Length: 220
Image (cartoon, rainbow, N blue to C red; front, top):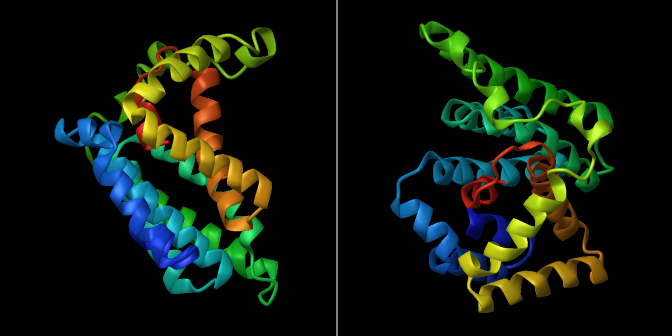
């Protein structure tokens, strides 16, 4: 997925480098070896990005349907895949002006409907009503941002700054910082959208999660 994303929307060298970094990054390798669902969620997330970018550039029924299938599969893996619906709006910046805005909006709607139909397969199970029973144990209520806008944002941010370089290793972490700096300075649109796509779920997690761990960054 990482190779396809880099190869198709940047150039072949970026795609090969992205694939290499995924393989050798300890953050990815560690959780992949543990066989956690977060790595499967991350894999679906990569392909959701590929299809979302493709849909923005060339909105077709086929691409929209495949995007819906991927988002639905991600929802069946783990409910934080809901972030894909939020981040999907970032791909609007890649919209091809040759097509009407309505075409892209209809593609998003069809992808959303397809994903939710797949998600509702879970209703066949007797435990569906218990899916949200422990949300309050892990997530702060939405109105907390009004009362305490910087808590737990800053504590979680300090944790992220502490262990992220350790889980990435210094060389790869430096490459990530160089990539972010290049994106901001060059204002390359695809790179900016990709950075925004990653930043949206990460910012929400930092603000609302009661417990923030490294595997949440992997799926973000």
